Image (tube, rainbow, N blue to C red; front, side):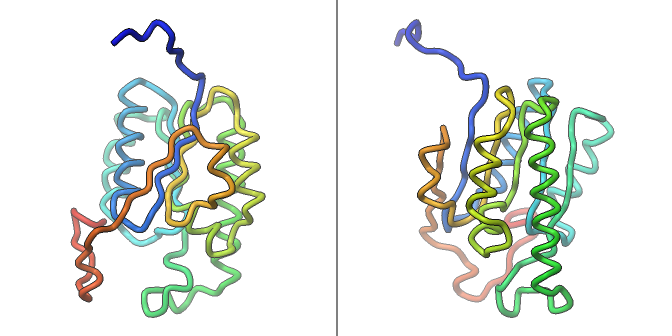
Length: 189
């Protein structure tokens, strides 16, 4: 197969969405590839605040990558998820945290310093009304030309698919949570 008619884009917008497992895992894989290519990489989380394995992993590799890896945990937990939602966090606390994380994502993606900015679970924050669809659109369209942007989470707005270069729908076929089993450490978080 000849690739002489193909080109490399200076940056791309990637979406990992859908009901299935693997969106954050795919974004972590992207982070690994980015760092392996010696890129400035930012990983921001919009929902998770509790201790999950990726936080431990990122903390442990931070000393290896120093200023090549920026990590920010901006979430306040599950929002509007019934008994899974933290009881001591108000709707306004969730909104404020999402807006603060969005402002940071905008700053990093527009700076030109980062080759990859990953916004983990930002789609959830948009779907829950903590961030507007217009704000997500602005994040995509106003990023630096050399910055690739990765957006994860369920329910990416279908009307914005024309703005992205790569979109993967993680389709759930079966998940043990549906039978009332909790997430497994090392597998689900």
